[in-house]
Image 1 (tube, rainbow, N blue to C red):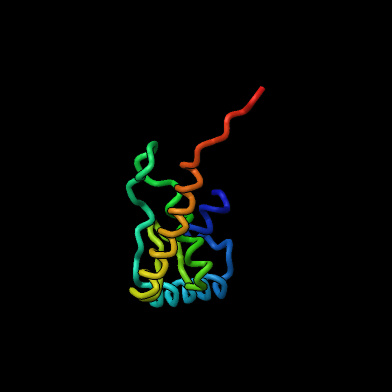
Image 2 (tube, helix red, strand yellow):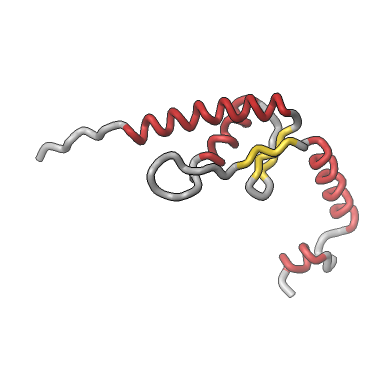
Length: 111
């Protein structure tokens, strides 16, 4: 059995104190971060169905605002609704900047 399977299935690769400490931290984080912001949204630009830049904008916005967040299963979890609104607004501003850069016309190359 591989080391990752032993770790995931509880085969004893890690010590009991480590496991209990890890579970306690995860339960504290789960209790604290309860509001979910979806990281999947329809792509307004031509191309892929889901916007590939939106999750990065959300993460960057949370970091820049200093809001604690965790990315779990296509969602960014924050503590309060107010934090979620701030993160979404700032992420939209970041995404608008990205879209403006990508829509700029390129200068022709003279040979």
